Length: 252
Image 1 (tube, rainbow, N blue to C red):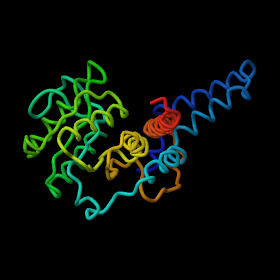
Image 2: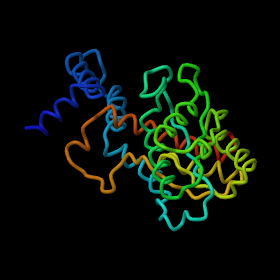
Image 3: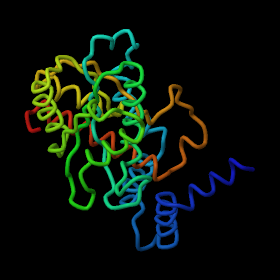
Image 4: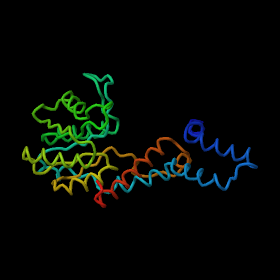
């Protein structure tokens, strides 16, 4: 009964409700609406919003770099955590401004690595949109609250995208003598990030985290039920593939 009700909820919320609404329009107005013209739109909306498609789009990005063993990180001299969005002015435990949920997973992994390796943390993320505030400010406050010593924190607050993350992080590493770093970002974002950091000549070990798919993809009724979360995953995957093309074409 629980699974049945969840399936019903999924179809009664966007984008499922939109698909049903378009089907209803086609049925009740079949004399004035040519179903053959609406069907491709319905089909595309449906496919982009089911996990059977979205998971398979983002999975290759997430699996491109395996998470390395700790033994592979022993010679790293710093941990680089890439920003992933923030919310400006909202109340936080010890101040104003919070990191976004995906970014929080990156922060958490950076903290866990810090406690094992005891090397400095570089956080890269600046002012992307005025209303969101400076990502580095929220990140540094969070790291301090979690016990990271101030002398081990190196904020990079100028970057507005991944290309600038790589460029300005390289400058900071050269300034402080960090020759090899651990690059921490979401697994789906790692292929593009790695390409840009490699282009800048940064010596790094990729450490993906913040996975959006399970190891084993399940094909059940939910895999073919539309959901806004699946649509979001599809959009993220498409953005990363387009970003990789832009990097290869020298446009980013």
